[in-house]
Length: 244
Image 1 (tube, rainbow, N blue to C red):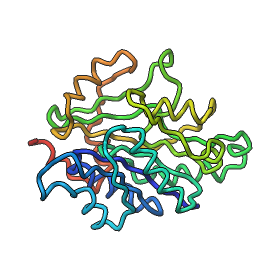
Image 2: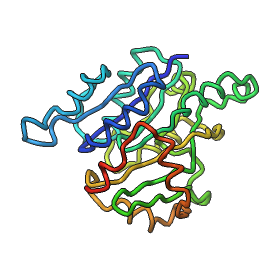
Image 3: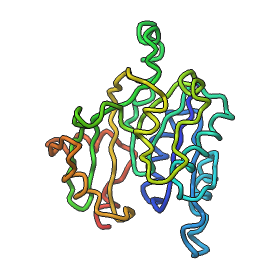
Image 4: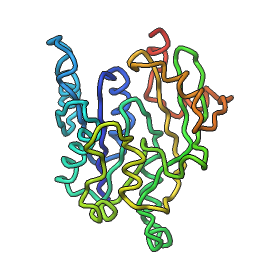
């Protein structure tokens, strides 16, 4: 089963490398959609492109505005590789080692496929703040959202074929995750049991930790087993983020 991951990156090159480290052993290839126009500094201008070259990734350069167009450009590039499924991952998100294997197991289940569950993912995830050295356990309140989280969302080629692989908004001011879910027209999705950990740090343009904690659309609990969760990502040195 051929799976291509898609990452859209903007000003998050520090955590991006760890995101790639977690994903690369699990998938057949990665499309990195980067932006080379966000800085005038020559040494940083094409850093995402250099990271793609260092890791032998497929690369698409696209302005970060409009964001949906950037994600769609990455998906269009992945389509050329004729994958059986695509995996969406944010550049500050880490996926546990067993994540893609779990998806493959689901796809091999005759019962699941007979019910046309072409989208898999999680609706509960963790957000880690190195500054606070704390993890928040998050899930959607069902009165707000019933779709799987965008990060870690696995979509079969069959589901994408039904909408000609056009699942991201081309206009500004539209959320990519919910738009994609509604465009796919899926009412049924299958949960995965791997971990999605979003790491928030100095690369964010806002204090996303405080934003998440105060969100009215999420149920938030503070995670007690911090070390257990971090140890699920053995290839990541979290200490390097705690001083930033």
